Image (cartoon, rainbow, N blue to C red; front, top):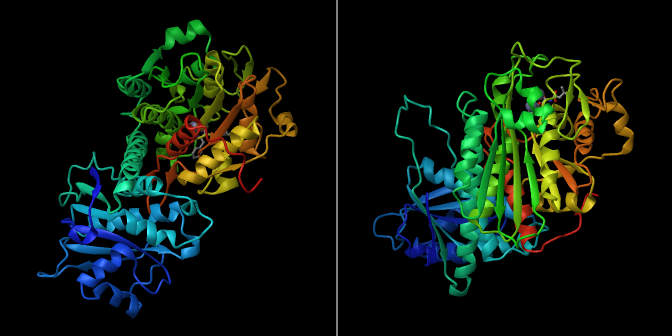
Length: 523
Ligand code: BES
Ligand code: MN
Ligand code: ZN
């Protein structure tokens, strides 16, 4: 999709559709919408008056412009933002994505959104949401980002498509207030980079595991390293053996696909400044290994590399946005398969850290590869160390499908991640990591065991990881409950959601811009 930001008025824009927002219960259309309405002789206001369009969140009405009417677009799309007091950037994202999909379903190929009107329609909400402080930059970002997210489709393997898939080719953000133009352009650019980063993650997760192998992921990392100031190193099995990465190598034993240990470095900050280090779980397929998973939904385990994909895409976005900070991404990649040489329950692995791990359940493989990933990341003396992983089914039980689990050893860092999640719409909720939980992962025969029983499964997994985070300021994001969606939502498709990358980019953006807010509400 081609994205443009320029000065112009909604009624003068020759697009297939112009999208205008409206808050529920507002009796009159505002700004750009009322200008359009005047030219359409009250046809929009009539929808409000009749009660056909109320402005309820994600409600859409499409009005066709008749021949001779003095509006250059072919359609006007009204979309509801919900109650004025509850308007937020998140609601704006949902409404925009819903409108963009409605535009596409109508067969239109281009649409425009008037920014000033959107700001005034949405700004009427003195809600608690982020919109109270949002300006042209944030709103333009939300518009572009959510349109890209909402319009996502994964169709590469369809060979018998009945009709040509409908696609939108052009989106224009219209600014009628020239001083806001530069800010809107910057926001739109950020929205495009972030939206495309999430698209990239979704694609990597939706592609099947016979395509996205550890080698494939390593090759993608090499492609990311074509960006300015990005370097990629790929360690293969012999190199990993020499270093003593017994934990990831243990997981890789049951598979014919060679494991890869990928390191991406982005230098956007001053030389010598300690980097942020990201570690992403990259199990390109999780069968469970010898502790084989049940067949139901096992196909979803092709997305068990979402953490790694998010980290990869975050480096790409950081480089594209030229974020002024140093960044390291560590991507330990392997399949988890039950081949004849696979690790068995009871086996003991020597991790890179020197700690020994008793494998109780070969399906708790994510924490094994992360153990070596976290140890390796400490070579870079990171200012902050964040891992992200589809780690535990228990996270689904604890938080449902609407929150990422966050745990760690530093409340400040956890607060930063929670804030970033609130801002971008990928919210994280903290679980405790108290000393009491460590009892569950004590082993009789090794330093630690890789499962802690059913109780507090997300927490004991994090407790395990913390043993490999050393002295680093560390936090862990469990995305097992959010990486896959059983149903389509406003800007989240069915299947891979691409979760995590937007949170990481927001977190990095805040850090690069010196935003270090304390923990938010809730704790
Ligand atoms: N990849 C799974 C976790 C997962 C489950 C992700 C559902 C997405 C949806 C992970 O490797 C796993 O199998 N975890 C086990 C751990 C257990 C054996 C301690 C689990 O959660 O059952
Ligand atoms: Mn598993
Ligand atoms: Zn897994």
